[in-house]
Amino acid sequence: MMEKDLLNRPMTEDEREIHAIYLALKKLAARDDLPPCVARNVRKALACLWQVTNDLDLQFEQLYHLGV
Amino acid sequence: MYSEYWNPKNETLPREELRNLQLYKLRAFCEWAYANSPFHRRRFTAAGFRPEQLKTLDDLRRIPFMTREEWMDSQLEKPLFGDLVAADPNHAIRYHLTSGTSGRTPIRVLDGLKDWEWSAELWCYGLWGFGVRPEDVMYFAFGYGSFIGFWGAHYGCEKLGALVIPGGAQTTQGRVEQIVEMGATTVCSTPTYALRLWQQAAEMGIDLAKQSKVNKVILSGEPTGSIPAAKRQLEQAWGAKCGDTAGMTETGSIVIFECSHQPGGTHIIEDHYIEEVINPETGEPVPYGEPGERVCTAFGRGFIPLIRYRSKDMVVRVPHDTCDCGRTGDIYDGGIRGRWDDMKLIRGTNVYARAVEAIVREYDAIAEFQIYIWRKDHVRDEITVRVEIKPGREEEWPELQKKLGTRLASAHEGLHFNIERVDYGTLARFELKAKRVVDDRPKAEYGS
Image (tube, rainbow over all chains, first blue to last red; front, side, top):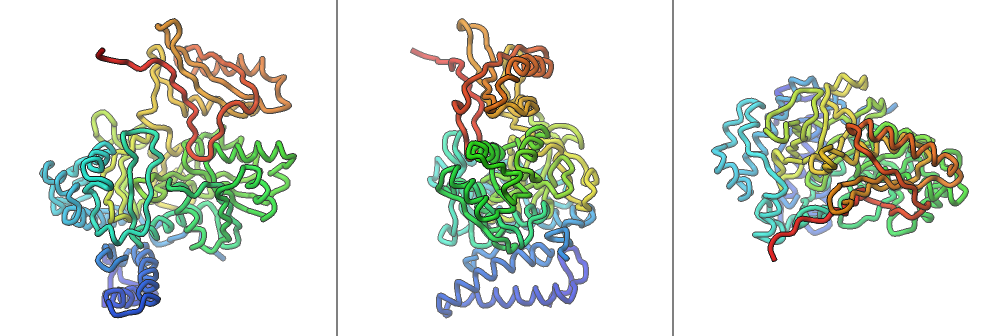
């Protein structure tokens, strides 16, 4: 689990929680056995969580390989 | 109690940390572009640049500038999108294109799911910054076409929880009626069209300042939003605060926005962009307070990476603390001041449409105007400002004609401006970008 943000500052409890949700969504988006209602809504949610984690300097990465 | 900032963490980030964040993103973004976009790999290689050379933010200058012409060439060589695209086009969920008034082909853009969400996110910085809140009723006086316009703002408003009224595909009269009927508190529009809405309302006997609930007008699409006289006129007409924003199809969202403190300029969203200001002739950076061309690197759109893009927008950058809102993003004083390529040369004098508009808008009796450039007797270039006078203000015309001519001449090295009055309602009205300059001079023709 990541403990520091991109600027090497300690993550807050809220930030750790948000980052964990982001990672969980990434894991789900990588699966190819989920029904469309799950697969597409997970991607939509991941696109939103990418904004939060990017706004908070927790990650800066591309997700096109996951269709996001 | 709401936070004043959409993103308190980054909007108040000390500038040293902001630069570190930009460097981190720049390096990762260039690595992505080098690995995935043939367009950028080719250009980086030709310039002898490799992403690992980015040790400090000043190393940014090792990266070659990117121009619209190169992008268009790429599209023409490899239709439809050229070789700039860095991801599988099957993952795109959105297509837009530039309004296409200049250049050989419009710029075509694709967005993935997160890029499109990012467009809305950046609008949230601006909308929230100007005071839009979940209780607001947002009216979009916008045609909802292939031009990117206010699409991102629409989704941004949904995201921040405001009620969105899409005012597409209807008459100006219908839009005025809806604004009043639905109790819209905020209207999103180009400055030109905001004025048109007000004129239409006046013709319908509606005083928007008194009979509507509008208290904010969000402006975009034209430089007019930061011209003090134009803004004053709009704020009086609507009885509302007018906030300027600016972006471009190429960036996918807004880059700058005016905060609710209205410092006379627009904050740059610097955790998502690197904005440079350069001398357009030499390419060298210009210091705070001097006019230059803005060059943009946009981090949110990996699908079509925009790196050191020459915008041709004319800006004057000033430090963030020119505004007392607490944001640490620097400011473009006066917003976008025009375009380096919209200068007209009239008998040796440089004339910019925005500068003319700044003076014309000082005269409240003028409803609409057009800058008409023509050639007299095949030799002498002339410039005529055609104006429409608001109904009921006709008696002001003789005095206005004299004053306007004198003001324009004194602001342009004594250049004589013809000032003509045309009937009310005869000049074109615009919903998107206004085209008020008509250059009727003959074009040079060569060959038989």
